[in-house]
Image 1 (cartoon, helix red, strand yellow):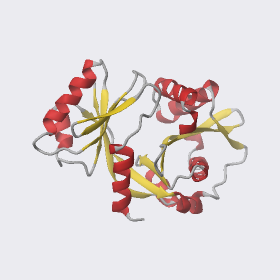
Image 2 (cartoon, one colour):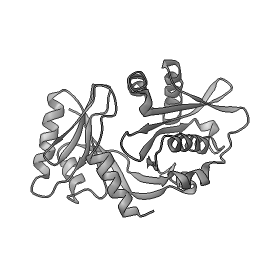
Image 3 (tube, one colour):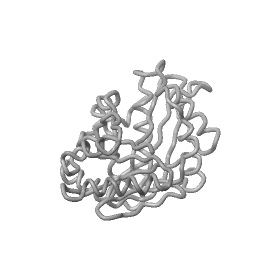
Image 4 (cartoon, helix red, strand yellow):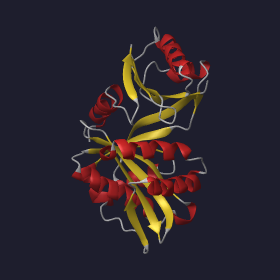
Length: 261
């Protein structure tokens, strides 16, 4: 993989050329910033910018004014190669709070299928598609147990997307009997060769048994069937080693900077 070329393609197609990620959302370019404005339960934030020392502070102030004028908190999704180099410091000075740094990882699907295609689920575990509210509730249950965090946003956002745009999201739950033990989703971006892996989590008692790996393999097969070439993921420190063994490569870092009015 030509890392620089793939990173440039990622920036062009998924950031500067971002598409709305759910019903009711809109993506717009204002100056040298691309942002998404969504309903309250959707994702609101900045996905791309091309700033420098002369316009960064004004651009930050402009985005704060836009989202707070709507009564929205929002996120500025900052990548390690974004300019100016002190953009993160400028965001903090303007009232943003940085979240945990993650690794931007991309894998070519053909290579991933070689690495993960033979993944085997533990005995008694099966993967089922999520297509309705009952399935979304199972995903939310896994999310809350795996990440110890509220999943009400997931219930609202995923239910709305499955109802309005079912062809752009693939969601799955791994069940041990009737117990949900792992869950994940994949978001497809029409008009690009990319699909994004999101929300992969496994409850603690089932970690280290190949379930997460199997869900990556499942989604890679679906992405290949849909004509995608690359899978992209923002990897935590916990998932990065697993993804590297499957064939993903790190292309940089990404950090969410949150602004709460």
